[in-house]
Image 1 (tube, helix red, strand yellow):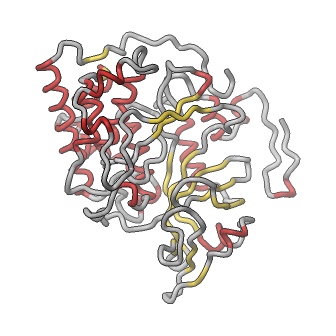
Image 2: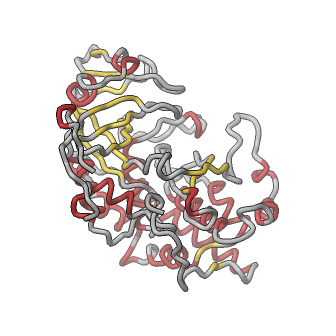
Image 3: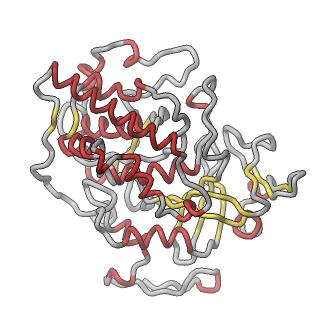
Length: 387
């Protein structure tokens, strides 16, 4: 396929069946398998994150849907990324009186979630990288989104600000501001277009009520998992332990906002869960939220591979906080300031110990806690894009 859109700002390139001609985002799409978004040893991962951090931004428009402001960024070689802006400092903790569904989304949480997901061996979050962008030249002056452009203004401090249009926190009272032009953002790799690789959205059985007064059924029924285990697709295959993997991830980063999850339709029910939209993670380091672990506590099941990785990351030589700190230094924004504060890193170790304690308690009561997933998989179709 040859591009003829050079005059529109896009690169004039020729893509062939030779993978070397493919841009990093396309290699990522073609590498998606039934079991993971990417292979941890794939050299394209480093190329992709470098690409996100350095490519010239050709277009910026507000992405429709969702509750908070996010932009769709376009690059000259037809790649795209989802941008979430810095709304508050890394050290700011979520107000204890604020409900989880009213919290700000954090750009550094999206970045840290990608690194944590990778360190846990899940590889289910699209690659995310931090970047400093110029609000004026890389959003305001190039956007074709009239609704977005109308929300730009210069603050009394002389900073260029905007607020967009969305359900929450899109108002002049909650602006996103450069300093005076430069702004920290997270850029997440876009998944293949839905017309190419359709995805199915699933309501989580442990979804919260999103009410200030009502509790969900799982919060009132200790035997709730017995019902889930009898309900498709949780009554066979790996779907239940996949969901418990996601609960472990969410507990470690204190993310209470996991109401739905997605899978690629091409792979049916026997496939991994996408761990998308993690902006409300890492809000509080001073306290833990045990209810996030309800799937593990109530079902007493966990993958053997996940359990072994958690035990490894609890050892002094491989402590999760140390490995996470080292991993985050690879992100460009770490040059500005650490992406997670030391209290947040310490909270990871504390929470990991609690996960292992829950598993131990389960093992004292049940014989079938560990689900052995290490003996191999039926590989099936290779890619959601090519299958």
